[in-house]
Length: 275
Ligand code: TMP
Ligand code: MG
Image 1 (tube, rainbow, N blue to C red):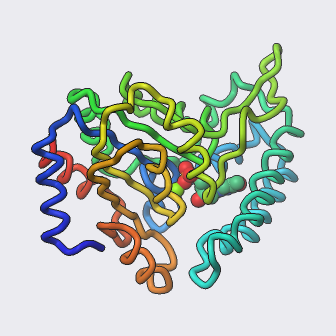
Image 2 (cartoon, rainbow, N blue to C red; image 1 turned 180 degrees about the vertical axis):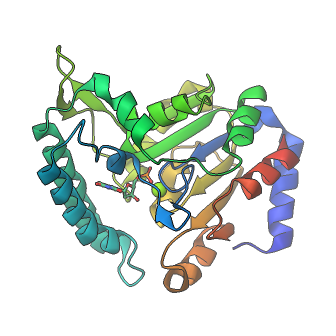
């Protein structure tokens, strides 16, 4: 965490530069969506696919086993990013292979999102609407499933024209059946590559050197690496899980750390100061 005065200084500089200099880059799962609600975990975009409309009981069980194996690795405070990397590639690759075997139908995705318990964080509407009103581009950069992510923000009526998404998109055949995932795989710890390869090319983001970055993983900090000549990059980290073990690294890495905060109150307050 940055000193309070440093954060205030940065917010002030961003306010002076105005909406025309700002872009917002945010992770999706467990950053724009809640981590938990009433003591129960809120599903990630991958977990929304756990619906009998889309995948078999057997596939669901295999995905759960993979989650139980690899999620503890993802959030393990005692291992380095380099150590975690190959495990994340294995996790995503295995899950995507399982999903492809299920012959998931595109026309059933919206129904699965409707039936899920997914929730955006409290205050999401103010966040999305305010950025749209001020014509500040919002880049959602997610290692989740792009088609599901879009459906979630669509169903919450906040998918505005200033929104850009970089994620893992499904590739459907002519009959609307899942046959592959498009492009290079994005997992939690290779967002830097995606930022350089894809975010850097988005014209809507160009000439905006001030960045508000939101994430829940240390890997999310690299999402702004594609910004050319950045001036002020203010980072907010949501620390949802393994709080005691990870607090020190989060405080050392993000400018502002929010511990078990299920709301958009702090990002919204920062934005109200800037624009
Ligand atoms: P994010 O980049 O939008 O946060 O998405 C990545 C999250 O998705 C990451 O924290 C792990 C989670 N995930 C699942 O919940 N289930 C899965 O099967 C996979 C591959 C990832
Ligand atoms: Mg996340």
